[in-house]
Image 1 (cartoon, rainbow, N blue to C red):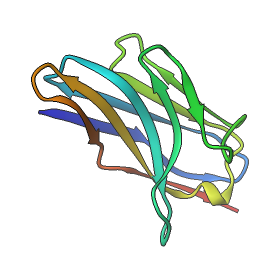
Image 2: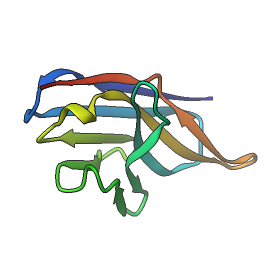
Image 3: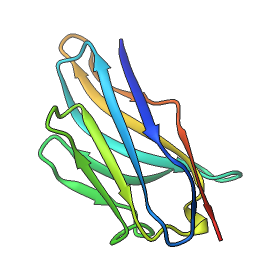
Image 4: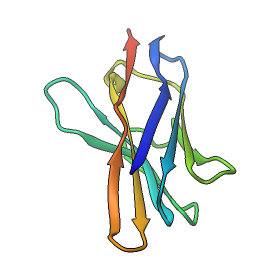
Length: 120
């Protein structure tokens, strides 16, 4: 089994910064992709940023040049540095880890989510 645990988040004023962390643990062969997604009330969950095992990154247009995704040295951790936050960034942020199991193949595992609230 694989566990994905997020930390960070909270309440910040518009223009401020927050940092999120995520760690994947358990039994797996390797991690292919880790990423951050968010879901605002009444809206569908959307991709925010992803990073591959080769450190290729992808960002939603709405967060480009404001958010930065990075991986830790242990490669099972991922961070999201969020700068110049806007009220529209308010959402529950989820971490997803796409891992490979030798026998059963590739699976996605989600964290429990962490609330980010940006006040105007």
